[in-house]
Image (cartoon, rainbow, N blue to C red):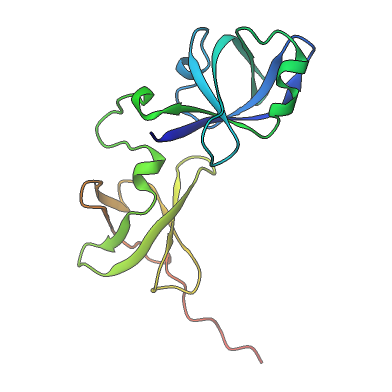
Length: 179
């Protein structure tokens, strides 16, 4: 079974078993609502415990989350750095034309004329729009593609291919000679 991270526990809050969670999901209200079932794991490993959310609330850039049957700081303080995740059966349906990150990572990225640009290796979320990091043979550095309709022409998850329009200035120009 595959698991997908929805938050990272950054520390504890108070003495009543609340943890500070940095959200990694677009569905915060669903994932952190009372009664929601989550799994706790070390980053990248198999979950070691299933938990049920007792309560959750926003606090600055974090969520403060408490779990049923874990009423004390002593129950959760060793979870700092752990991930909260859901299993594949808990994934929500997305609107057409939107994708989960795990569906995008690893796609072959090509131009409309078929030029291979590389593999999508990471998705950055700096602000207004996501940025796709593509690593491949066309550039010494990673190619940074804005995730906008003018640039991303088609995503075919089943075929494992993203077709893009390479906007002027996105590829490294020749490095100037240093004198």
